[in-house]
Length: 199
Image 1 (tube, rainbow, N blue to C red):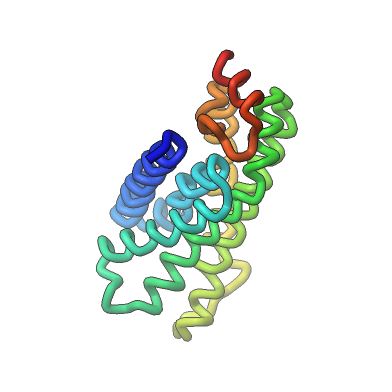
Image 2: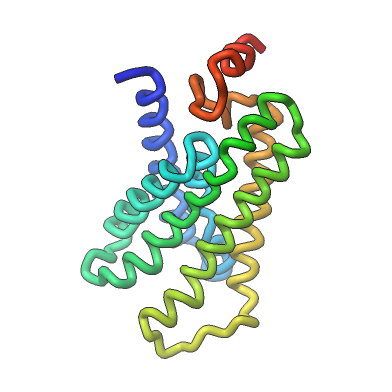
């Protein structure tokens, strides 16, 4: 196993653990807290997606959804498991569409562009995960309680996920570039990577 594969596996294990912990904490939390922070568990998926790309992010989201569903006892209700848990986490991986530009601008210390890419990826991930977890899951599962687009909980969840995720990832990028750019990144040339490591 080469160094890149080893780093990727470590990142996936760390993020999987974080997703499970965050899902467990929000499930145990007060109803009002869980209503507002229901999407917070997608943040580790966004981080991995921005480090390793959208395909890895989607894979991690699917794996995380399987594990979280098992812990929450959703195995007997596979439709709820897939639509309410697995799909939102998988869709968070689309933040990886901005991985290349995030890493290139960060490596060149163009922080305003880096923050814009992080924010856009986080916004798209939060929007897609929120829409699937909210209205689409209720429509698909034919729940008796009709979804109301004016319900503030969905918008607060998506907003908090976007704001918290963007702030944390931007602080990570500013504090230490290697937290978002792995060694031997596929998005940077060997020369760019070596200059990053020498800083």
